Length: 450
Image 1 (tube, rainbow, N blue to C red):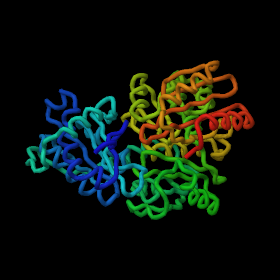
Image 2 (image 1 turned 60 degrees about the vertical axis):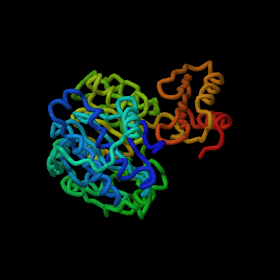
Image 3 (image 1 turned 30 degrees about the horizontal axis):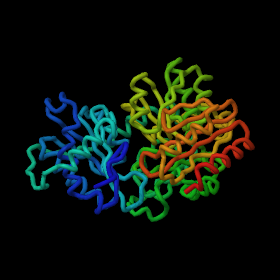
Image 4 (image 1 turned 90 degrees about the vertical axis):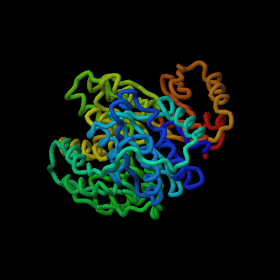
């Protein structure tokens, strides 16, 4: 059980770390994380699962645990994580739990949890407490249900919700989409209504991921999509991760677009409707993202990495939109939750409205030169951060997430991973030469990348 309770979810290998016994106890003690008001009024929780074969028994055990504690279950069945968030808000229930291991390999599984209005449960807001309860739990798994269960189909409502953001359906565009055998495959009915000529890749649900890993952040997992875009002269391509809460995009030349450029591209759309609004971006994002928000008349707010932090900050400022470098994009009009398919809709709107190619649209955001995220295995993470603070004491330093050091012509962030035993580096500079120079300098301190 050690190590499966993460910053944003519960995740581990099945069945040695995550199994039916754990699932039952997670369900049983989830009630303790709910607000007193929800507990008093009669808690109702949405449960759904991804396409992994062991998600079925885990979901059943989870539901038994919830019901044994008096929580009514609404089972929405096979679903992507954004659909679970939508259902939680749309049905006005006490919370939601998705059985998934997101982009992790086939042997992994876990649980993503939220409260009323799809407010995420993170380490600080409940997962640490849940670890204590589950670890010390005396329940056997044989406890009888005392609350009911019903099934509900909410996909049609979600599809209409997503389609409500389509601003123009002309002209017809050519789209390649890679579902990686994950939950993005369930978007086919939505894609069929977006007036696109679709070239689908790996739309067969298969939790063994036979074609490639369902993690579009890794360049090797975009090779098939890039090839498809070029072969069919597509206007763009989209790649979804395993539970389809993230998306990465490829322009018409087959080139992957960093997600912070997508944030900078879409922010002005929201600021046209709400001049002066706050747009939230994560601290790994390019200087160009912040500048694009300012140029469009918005207030850029920088936040630490992680959906629970991003969503909380967006709620605090009533922000209509936010984005992360990992490919999460958040929408106030979607219960402040992430939605990969809504992001595709907004990009299609932008291309159609402007009549410009995607590469042209993002070109103004290509002002600086970045390394992308580089990982290092470091035994003493805190010690390394202290070393960096001493070495770069002449820079502008903050500790919002790990350490960020800024100079006039370059900056870097080094932060501990929330999900793996790693330090992660992102570095950006005004010239490629300076970026390469400073990258080599940081590597000489941090060691060899992994």
